[in-house]
Structure formats: structure tokens, C-alpha cells
Amino acid sequence: MLAFLGFLTIAIFLYIILSKRVSVIVALILVPLIFGIFTSDLASLGAMILEGVTGVAPTGIMLAFAILYFGLMNNAGLFDPIISRVLKLVKGDPLKIVVGTAVIGMATHMDGSGASTFLITIPALLPLYDRLGMSRLVLAGIVALSAGTMNLVPWGGPTVRAASALGVDVNDLFNPVVPAMIIGLIWVLFVSYILGKRERKRLGIQELQYDFNQELSEKELQLRRPKLYWFNLIFTVLTIIALIKVWLPLPIVFMVAFAIALIVNYPNPKEQQERITDQATGVITVVSIIFAAGIFTGVLSGTGMIEAMAQALVSFIPESTGSFMALIVALTSMPLSLVFTPDAYYFGVLPVLSETASAYGIAPAEIGRAAILGQMTTGFPLSPLTASTFLLIGLAGVELGDHQRFIFKWAFGTTIVMTIVALITGAISLY
Picture 1 (tube, one colour):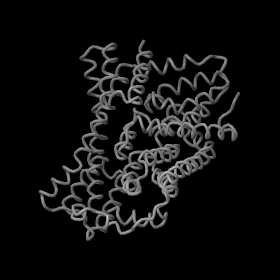
Picture 2 (cartoon, rainbow, N blue to C red):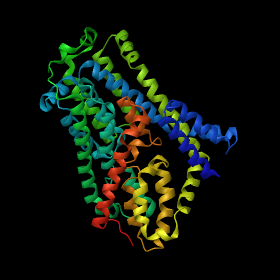
Picture 3 (cartoon, rainbow, N blue to C red):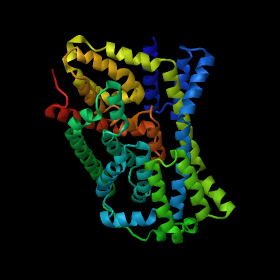
Picture 4 (cartoon, helix red, strand yellow):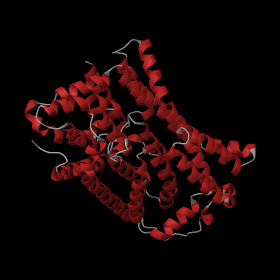
């Protein structure tokens, strides 16, 4: 019964947001609440919701101050010279910009952190996309594909979780899938080429003026701080280093950075309040989604729906398909990112799948390799169960349903491509 309610909760949630019946916030709050009532009393349900909201609070705080910080840097003109130089390099060609986006996304995800990747990449590239009239869905989608494929790195969350859950060495999981990962990254570049070519066809190669000051309104010019450009650039680099090195908890990094940048760029208290007010709509919209997502995950985890879904999933696998377990795990890994949190899948589902596969002579490491080809790798930037997804769409200013519809087939395609390579190279096998 719990498994049925869990799958039904997620199915209805995905349906109503993809069909745009209600807003994402409404769906995240009401859908799990309605189904949660059938599994728990109101007091227990309230405790689950509070635990879920508390769990996402650090992410909500980080996102709020990240939006404030990068909004402030945009007002001060930090990105103007960068955009100007990039436009000179690509000559207003959307194709080159989209391919460049993929390369930047891959490079910035070397640390294995989706949050830092999105916080670095999206604010830097969004003004460029807006200048040329390019689709924000393309920006969010390509960054998602790049970060997702790079998330196979040994220090990334999925690989570490899989190794811990199965009791195998991380290198035993990662090293054999390196060829698949490389081909996956090449595939992402190919996808960026396709999407970039579409944007080029839609918009053309634009002849642009590179002095953006001529394009700014009087108010925007007044907010620019050209004399503080080098301070803002160096300070932003230090902030990014602090995020990667985790000198302080990520929310604290942005809180402190925003406070310092605000007082340096706009010493007048009235101006400071205006800068905060300018970003208020974006902050409230995105942060409210984060806390609503906390309700969703809190109810699904607290009621036991996720655990029940894991057990039901394994029971659905016929014994006759046992020799194909690695292939089945690989092909289902990415879509199941929309159903299970990383902890639920890797510590709940994967050990059971591995135990089942062992009866057919399939090693745990092989099942682990199959899982990381999609589960919270290519799948994490689309999942409503990860805070990073909401960070991505919030910074890019796109709807979750639109983002999922746009990039799902390409993300699933990446997993399929990597699975084929993994079969060819022997990283996973058919017994």
C-alpha cells in the first residue's frame, strides 16, 4: 500500500507540473500532504514535514544570498567585460556559445558539486544568453547535461554512495567506466552542437556592438561600479574558492560575501536597501520552492513510502531477466532519479539489487557501475528530489516542467550512450 501511494504521489506530481495544472510550489506542498494523510496521523505528518523543511533550510539560505550576491555583481557590471570578450570571440554565434557553455559546465563541475557548478556557471552566462535572445532552457539544459555526466567523478556523491553501500573500492567502480564517461562527455558536446545549431538557425549570427554601456539605461549606468571592477572580480573568485574549499558552510559564505560586497559597492544605506528590494521577487520565488520541496521529500521519506517503493521495485524484476540485471539497472538508473533520493536509491534500492544479481554471478561492483551511469548523475539536475535542481532552474529563471520536458530525452540519451560503451568495454556485462 505504501509503495502504491508513493508511486502515485510522484506520478500525480509529475503529471500536474508537466501539464501546468498548478504551480510547482502548490504541487510540492499539497500532493504529498494529501497522500500523507492516508499513511499517518496529523501530528506525525507535521513532524515529518518539519524535518523535511529543516533539512533543506541551509540550501534555501544559500540560494537566497547567492541570488542577492550575483544580482549585486550584475548591477555593478562585473559580467559586462566578460560578455563583451566572449561575444568578440564567438562573433555573436549562438552555436559557439552553446558549445562553450557545455565546456564551461564540465570544467566547473570538476569539484563534483552541483550547487557550486550552477552558482558559478548560470549567473556568468545568463546575461550573455539574454543579450542575444537565446533560450534560457538551452542554458539550463546544457549545464545540466555537463554537470550530470561529470558527476560520475570518484569524489562525486553517487559514486561515493554506491561504493559505501556495496562495500567496494571507489576505484573499482569508477576506473572501468572512464571510457563510457569520456564518450558521454563527447555526446554532450554533440548535443550542445545540435541545440546550438537550432539557436543559430532561429536567431542567426548577430553583429553586435561590444560597448555595452551604450545599451544600458540611465538607471543601469548609475548602478555600474567600473572603478570597483577588479575588487569585485577578485572578491568573487575568492568567494568561489571558499565555496569549493568549504572554508565555511556554503550558506555562510554567501551571507558574508553579500554583506561585504554590498557595503563596498553601495555604501549608502538607502542604496543597499534598494539593491535588496530589486532582487526580492526572485529570492522569494526560488526559496519558497526549496522549502516546498522539503515538504515533498520529508513526507515521502518519513511515511516510509520511499523504502516501500524500493522493495516493490526489486520484486517487480522477473527471475528470467536475472542475467540482464546490470543492463536493467543501467537503463533504469536515470529515470529513477525522478523517484528516489540519492540516499534512498544507493542505500535502500541498490544493495537489494546487488544481492539479487549475485545469485546470477554478477559482482556488486558491476551493479554499482551500472547505477552510476544515470542515477543522480545524468539524472540529478532534473530530479524534483534534489535541491540542486531548484537551484539550477531558479538561477536560470525557467519552470521545472519546461526544463524536464526539454532536457529529459537528452539526459536519458546520455545514459544510453554510456551504457552501450560500458557493455562494449566490459564495465558491465550480459551473463
